[in-house]
Length: 138
Image 1 (cartoon, helix red, strand yellow):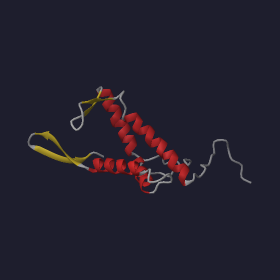
Image 2: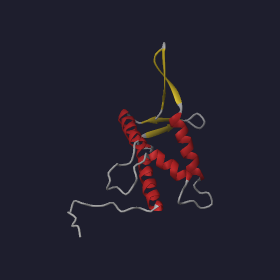
Image 3: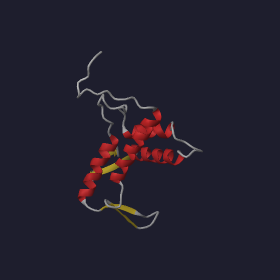
């Protein structure tokens, strides 16, 4: 029988429902860190409302957190979660959820689709009045 050293650990495999719960919790925490009234102020009324950062520091933190959200989960072989992007995991959960009672996942599916479309949207950035560049949000 092989003896394990104290620093050797093996990740326990998670069931699909456990992995979904872990990913949803991580995704919620990342979104909550980016989108909250401590960092953002809401001005005006729909459809003409405007969301502004309270400071440049808040905007920089948002950008860092967004990059983290758009990145992949840890590649660590000790992690029980397969490596995937948080956005990819969100799409997968919305498309094939473990928790779905009477189509309760539909608001998540719709929000995920809208967010993905926003990320993939091409925008024009004008560096100089005569130059035009296109790039996507994500």
